Amino acid sequence: MTGAQPLEPLAQAGMRGARYAAWRFVLQRASAAVLALFVVVHLATIIYAVRHALSAQAIVARMHANVFWPAFYALFVVAVAVHAPLGLRAVADEWLGLRGRATDAALAVIALVLLGGGLYAVASLAG
Amino acid sequence: MNDSSTLARAASADTMRRNDLRARGHAGFLAFVAHRVSGIVLALFLPLHFFALSQALSDPRALDGFLEWTRRPAVKFAETMLVLALAVHLAGGVRLLFVEFVGWRAEWQKTAIAMVAGTSLACALLFALNA
Image (spheres, rainbow over the protein chains, first blue to last red):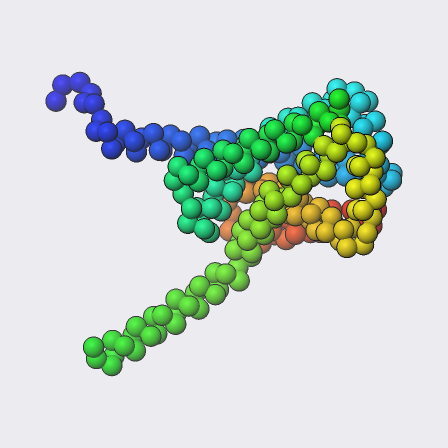
């Protein structure tokens, strides 16, 4: 045999599938690590906010105080939009037996809804 | 089919059933279910959360009206459950990251899961007592 032989189409598809699976694994764990930090801050903020009488004015004032909070929540939304659909993908696969292109397309829509809805909410409070 | 093979099959099915129940009563399985269920709850809640916060743009009074509604005891209870779900998913997720990237020790798992449960309950209690 001389040189590398081209892979069969089926093997190529298998390689592609494995690469996607590896990317999903990395993205799920990377977003989880980022979210771990964000959720600690969010939980502390929730408890602080309810202790000091939660109001729309207080939330908007906090979001306008400096650039940290809008930036923090925008990144939070991006990490959630990556993390939640990947988690739901595992649930759909293992508990509902849903997999394949239609499921992935639905999950992509969920990711976009979370990203769009979340960034819109941040813009609403910070704008 | 003779009697002994029927008996052997029944005994084996019984052993499998008992092993299955034992596995499902295991702390690791409970941690798995808690992580799954809390994740689903949070994913379902997020669109509502974003929608409620978006009200601030269209009408700040609408957001205050919504916050007023959240002062009802039943809503407060639901919020406490959401905080619990968030804390369970956070603490359970940190445990999973440790298992996957730091190392797995069988003798540590029950302690780790108990710490997850304790931390999560403490967070929910802290919220409930201040809300």
